[in-house]
Image 1 (cartoon, rainbow, N blue to C red):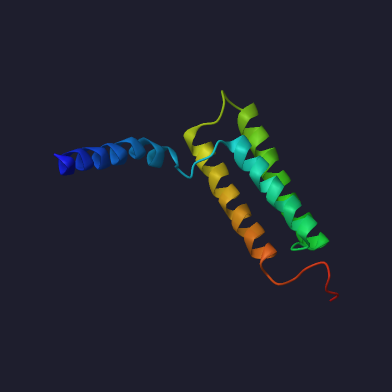
Image 2: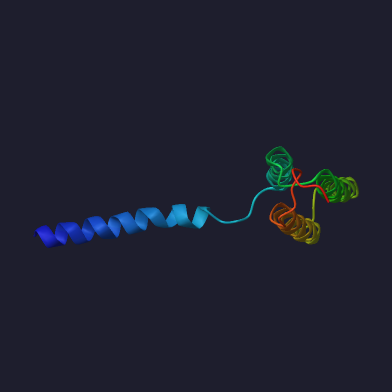
Length: 112
């Protein structure tokens, strides 16, 4: 009887955790992604991981994507699936660029 109760409890715990795991998808709304990317650039500057020229280039890329999003939104009723995919792929590239620049062993404390 005790084993049966433990099995039922374990199965219940697994079933309860499934919706939580499914909701932890990597997709984020565009506004959240923008805020996250902006925050990562700011943190990189504050920590010294990003030099001023690196941060300026990353912010320029960010602004270009933001302008493109505004153009997409202006030309139709919200964003189409294609526009959303395009923006997401551009955000992915910017995110990779931020990571690369923050980990390239250049920092503000060094003089080149």
